Image 1 (cartoon, rainbow, N blue to C red):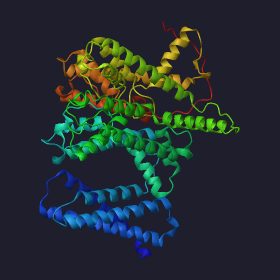
Image 2 (spheres, rainbow, N blue to C red):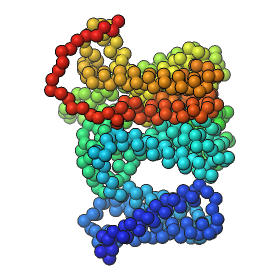
Image 3 (cartoon, helix red, strand yellow):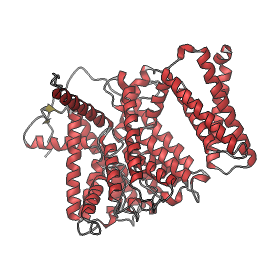
Image 4 (cartoon, helix red, strand yellow):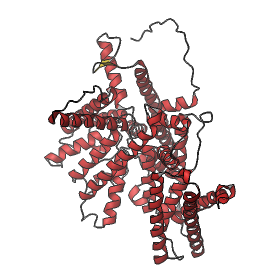
Length: 579
């Protein structure tokens, strides 16, 4: 038996069966099947589950050295769940139909088996930037093909529209060319939700952590690549950082879904299952700053537009998502330090003070975020008081103004018609979209830190200073150079996109095109209502703009330019005339 486990042919057979199961699952969900095909697929599912459970049990018997407690507990729970799902299938449908329970069991099995695979990443083939870009491209293409399945839509969809929707979901933008609520079936909406979650956190984040979990370790090159993608300070702590990211994400999304569920009107959504799905979909969409909604008019829909508690909860979710994981993790460390300090002080015990727990990056991003929220809300409230806010109550005006000021920073939800805003308010919205969220978050834009550094730089120049100082710290020169590179590249890409869309749609007002392009690049998802009427060429331009905005033009340049070694010499410095 041990020889069978170590032999290559059983492993190849299992891999083949799992690929067949994956293809069958796609056909199962995406097509209407004949009875013979259903029986064949059920038989294949049972075979895969039986062999999977058998080989896992034999592994624990004959490969005791590979025992990992966490994996053992997971496998034990998986066995129980698979047994329950198989019992449900036999008792309810047998071989005549495929139950959702059996599908869930096979999905769990496929996820665990594919993440157990020993994939060794080689930097000589792909650098981390290229791997990051390639993962997004493959996810977008896979999503587009899945959305084209017959059972994903109500009336079918073209490849361009499917690619646009998939790109918008993976790049957590929210721009739509077809109505999500009526065009896509439950299966299609679920695909969009999964694409949002995978795109918001990065498919490599999920794959890398679960692969590490099942294997109990990872190669140095895998850790090095993942540290570049997650901005980890120490390579040895990369999987700890990834674990924290996943825990924070699922915790906030779970709490958010619960709060959304509690604030839904039962008269509008009487079914419990509909309310649960609505809550989960919008919580994931909000935290990932995607802006997709299952409602025809987003949150401007009747029955939701005056539901201010619901809107406030969604604001909190997408603001948390836009803060960035390093900021959230660092803030939690700071709160833990303050809490312990006060508890020990109350107990009259000594506690060593630790300075600079709250990093400079954290302070700059938090302050910039707070200033943008206050200024944006105040401007919208004052300018639109007798316009789009007129039909709301006193508290409603404030919540709607707050929603309108925070959603452009890549959230993408709308509780008002943005085309009805004053021209000057639209310009403010464009600026907020361009700035976007904080770095290492689910949001887009040039990022709050970039905008803050640029602002501090010209203030420093105006004062005649040769360096940028804030909070008794000096900002590194490389950060200033990166900030201005990101800003200039963003304006170049946005400018080219505006020019191309204006060429392909010369009848559309320039303001509408500019708004759409800034929204696409910043992955904001807001629109003045022209997305669906654009030509296919303009849609392709927006697809490219959304993709570049999500991965950043600087990452694309890093991916395709060979990294140069720093020389040991310096040329004489000289000043260039600027103004």
